[in-house]
Image (cartoon, rainbow, N blue to C red):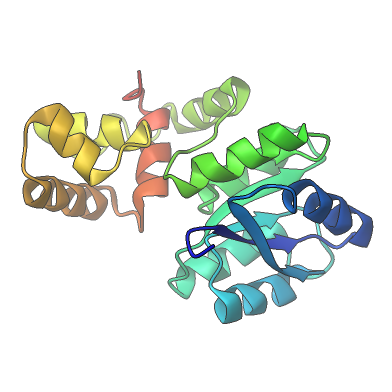
Length: 211
């Protein structure tokens, strides 16, 4: 199926990779295209295979998940990265989100929930649990204040980006042309000094622009 979501698994434990593959191989719309046993291999495989979604562990020998995320972003890789971790501490998860991860799930996640999470991040959504969203917000208090001077329309567009809306959906919601929305998005990314919509969405969460 040409429209399957192409997934790369990056984890240093073979049993975890095997378990994830077993979960996903029964899904009609998801295809596991490769595996990697550490961060360096994961970055190389992501460059080679160009998956839609990467399931990545945080703690790995050598290059960890956070550094792997930074490398992928530096290289312009557009894969959405979903952290799959056994660590629940905010200090472990928050740096990965700041580095560009689209969200995270725990390794004991229900198979159906995992498949749903993959579909969600592939669709452009950001998966944040309340305690992590709170940590991001707390980290930002007393920092840059209100941040860059966004127009009211840009703040509306940013709020919808954080809701996971596509440009077409934003245009429909605000009664604008897609070309106008695209211009707003470009201006938002420039003003916030972020690389992509995921980082813009995280900024919106930190500054209370989400519903």
